[in-house]
Image 1 (cartoon, helix red, strand yellow):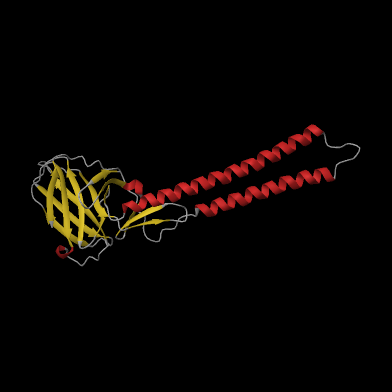
Image 2 (spheres, one colour):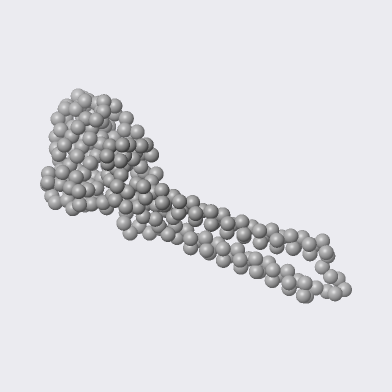
Length: 246
């Protein structure tokens, strides 16, 4: 276990909430929906044309369809055809943007990211979090559990000043075996002099292992068994020390 104070500020720039995508979660197919819309539009087009031809074939020779009305019907048919063509082109543009976004996401692989969540993954025998305290405390206790709620690690860190701290846990220090990639949950219990609980913000620090693109174009990043979206990331940093905000 290693703990280092990294800042005197309690502000982690943490986002409220987090979205974790778990393995096996089903998603709707965007391309399938687009294909269905296309088929429905083409069917509507054929129905419109069929009604127009039937009307012409069965009109009364002594009382034919008014030319103005017939022209309006042709204009409506032309507008429908143009709208279908426009929708198809927009669909192609969206597909192209999704492909471009997927390629951009591949640059995350191998980089360290920060996510506003108390969850992290054991990677290469190490689990890493950053937490902050908005007040000083005589006793700060760290509790780490696995996905089943089993106690993995517990430690009284003693007195701590307000600020941000990095907490790193080695797999050799855990009470029970933790597999590489396994998701862990961290909580920090700290009390002030009056015995009131002090708020502790927590973010996780993980390395992106892979990027996955669903059939609907949604991009999912993976760090061990922890899944998350690009919009969950609050900071990106290269492993060589260079960093950039996301």
